[in-house]
Each structure stands twice: as structure tokens, then as C-alpha cells.
Length: 158
Image 1 (spheres, rainbow, N blue to C red):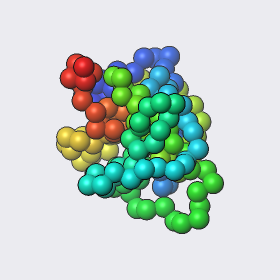
Image 2 (image 1 turned 45 degrees about the horizontal axis):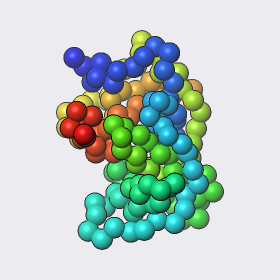
Image 3 (image 1 turned 120 degrees about the vertical axis):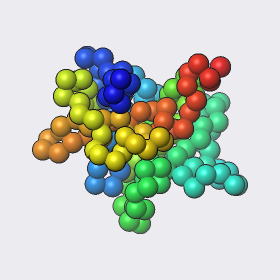
């Protein structure tokens, strides 16, 4: 089974694209709970460097990751945050926010057009990129929500 096979794409599925740095990424729309404006976060002492903090969202405490840090991308230039959003991702009862530079378009996740990740990425056990999709003269990197948010398998989440 290839990495693309494990992404479990349904032919009619769509994804939400978002920008981190100069690259577009997408996650299955079915795993996007909502998109909200960036706001005040409570820091978590001793947390991983990509965890910005926690946020209260309608009675839930939600961890918020920095998407750039999670993917080892350079920090954003200061003062350019008008388009910054938090994409709330859901997996197996977990809700995790991810700060992104901007939210993009809906993308048709056509399994026939999905290619494996670039060479070198697939060998990394924790790499959340599971495939790439041609898009508007470039490509969209497809993210596995569970790996991106470092969550346990649904069978382990109970």
C-alpha cells in the first residue's frame, strides 16, 4: 500500500486549501470543523515548540499549533497577519487548531491525480504530507490530519 492509498481519498471528496509560506496545503474538508480568526492563546509551559498554546472554544480547551513550525518552515514576516486564520481540525474526537497564513479555495481531491510526496519525504515517519495534487500551475501538498496534529490512531484514541 502506498502513502497515497493510506490517505483514503473518496473520488467526490473535497479539501480545504491554506497557505503556509509560499506553499499551498490541503486537508479533507470532512476533517475541518471550522475556520476562525486568530485570537488570544494561553501559553503552555514546557510544550513542544510548534504548540502556540490553548484556546477556549465553546466550552472546549483546544490546543493550537503553528503550521509553519510544524512543517519546519521559516517564521512569517511581522505585520503581515490580516489573512491569518485558525483552521480547526477534527480527528477521532480530538479538535486541534492550526494557525495558517491564509485560507484558500476548496480543492477537488481526485484520487487519480494525486501523486506520491516528493522524494525524501515519504521516508520520514512523522511527515504529514501524503501526496501532492496539481493545482493552478503548481501543486497542493495533501496533509494527513492525524499525523499533522500528532494524534493517535482512532483505535488508540478511545
